[in-house]
Amino acid sequence: MKKILQSLIYLSIAIVFFASCEKDEARDTYLGGTAPVFTASVKDSIGLNFNTENDKALTLSWSNPNFQFASGVSSQNVSYTLEIDTVGANFAGPNKRAVSISQDLSVTYTQKAFNILISDLKVKTGKVAQLEMRVIASLGSVATNLVSNKLTFKVLPYAPPPKVPVPVAGTLWVTGNAFASGWSNPLGAPYVTSQKFTKVSDTQYELVVDMLSSGNYKLIQENGVWGTQYKKLSGDAYAGTFEKKDADPGFDAPAVAGKYKIVVDFQAGTYTVTKQ
Image (cartoon, rainbow, N blue to C red):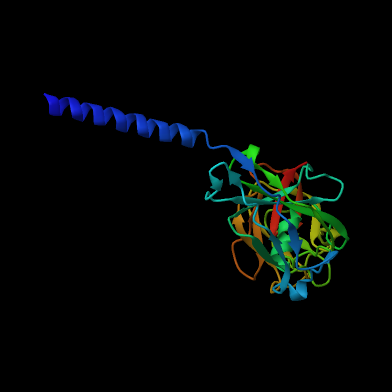
């Protein structure tokens, strides 16, 4: 009986000891840290050029925030968020980029990668844009967020090459049995006019035309030539992708006959067909 009582006493002491330890740990207080010092390998401007797009654009670096708790320096994993926005938006713009970077204290971008990254900001290609960047360090809670200084840069975004080669002469027609012309090539009057696209930009063409409810069609960039045509790659009668290739399949006619607007986007390699 005496041994049982001693065992119970020792067990009680152990429980009190561990409970005390847990309370001490629970009382460990977050004391803060030091806002990261944000630097870059370039100053003032970031060079971007399609001809050198695989070269390095810049390296962004920041210092360790050294998060502190009452028990000492935190051993938890620190996460970082790189924020990019246009100057004046104060990192609250509708198109702001926020890139998560786990634990690393730097990130490097090629010109191509950075050009793609900032395209979501809706900056115009071929026009100088002013951007600002900063880094936010965190232990996973807003209460622990530490915001770095911000850096400002000028950048000239470039448009990547079109996914599909544009018409060499800047002309484009449709022909096929989805239209009154049938598979005529070359197209004669009046179809050489009524089935000719309007060039909206270097990479976009549009046409409003009467279409039948059956059949197929191709896009030809040279009237009378099949070898440089465009054909459907994927999709249906109303939207999809296309490529430059002298082969099938053709684009499908819509289910209902009528007047339609065909938009061909060589930059994205897509087409849309919309009832008017």
